[in-house]
Image 1 (cartoon, rainbow, N blue to C red):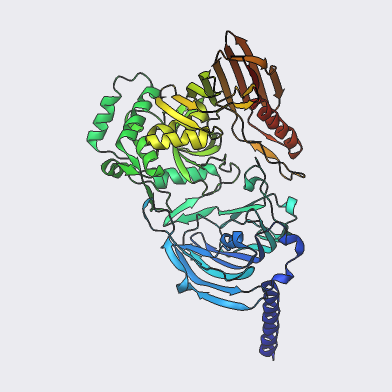
Image 2: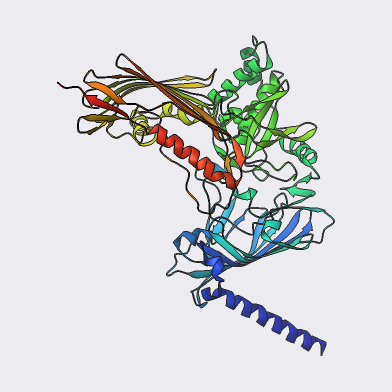
Length: 634
């Protein structure tokens, strides 16, 4: 009798779940507020992680998502990574039309199966199965179910109840079950702002989360959207056991298990590097010689194998092959420095143009890149070891101004990388300009770039002449019609980290005519042409990641046929976002034009956004101001 009752109850529960799912397959049941500004709606996403032991957990996921239009196709999320330590037990997809009728079923062996890393990677042991599906009509719904056994526990899947821009969530649930004696750490961010419920220490549920629309200058998505991270305090990465109570523990594990034993060098290399540095007087002089030796000898090639892609290749192999990935080249450089008595620390970081931090308050396998840290009195010098051209100690635009994890013999330590301030991110343009009687311009331009702006310019020297010309025409001076590049020359001072461009140009019909008048914009070569978008009701704060300074000084000689009728007044604007000054003087048919724009780095409230936008609009207006010339009677 008991067995019969249990069977009946089980049948009723299954019927109820099936009915709930059927309801979610029908597009008409999506709440209206979740369809607004959404390309896709997550109808239901249930994630369960069952921790068996320090070296094993089982991941199951059942996901129902409705794609509303073509832009939502990439949000399906029907993929699963695997390798020797990640075994896919079950993988299936079902496709439903807008009314909830099943139209296609895809089983595990029908998924596309490819390498999980880009084509530039030399070799890798990671693969991914993914759904390749071309929809017949929109909207449509996808049911994705998977079960995966992980025998490497260094990476516990995180949870994003809102998965990105233009995607809303009707129901999402995340649960960790722990049948081991290993402690699980969980950190949540921004849950209160989205009314996400915590049912227990490891069980969370989210409902009716509206989509988020991107806004200009908004901070990184993870800083304001809900996000959960999890980690085990004892874990295994491909047979290597680790302890992770804090960053000290984690750093010790990396030092002792991933780095130690990988830095032996051939004797001839030891001899060479000692000879090269024999006359150097300081550690920094030695380090610079070693860095340039490494740059000249090696090249970057991605190699994603070993302990989860985290263990660097042996320094001896890097020397023999003359290539390596970020881990290998960083480790190789550290080995070379060790031979000449210079202390350095292998460093894990997020490499990105955006400023992404290692979370100092949550130790776990974070980061996507490796660089090298050199203690220098009370500060640090940072080396990007994958670049053959970067100056010694230059890290702007990719690893600057963020928290990184340095690996020391005593353990891990969170340290901030170099911040490039507005005064350091300097671009100076000096130009001698001739305005002829036809309104055309000849210009000799001298550009010097430093700091973050150095990184935006120096790459041009390695392009073809055609590419260089296109850079000036289509990118740097894309507001100038009829631009001809007559001459180009470049100089890269890697010691001072200054990049210089000398360019000669002609701009036919630059000025416009209005009867007997010539209208001329004196800011020929550095006008602000774009302004931040306008929002009636901005939702997000805004961030200026990197400040900068632009200084422009032009000597403009004009033809004798012209006389000045009207000229702009001096301008001076200053606020918390930056400053802008403009001055103009005339003497003997020569106009001296001076401009300085400073934009300050900072985080600002959404209420300040309109003031910031108005500052940009004001700069743009003055940058486009004109001088009015009269044509003298002939």
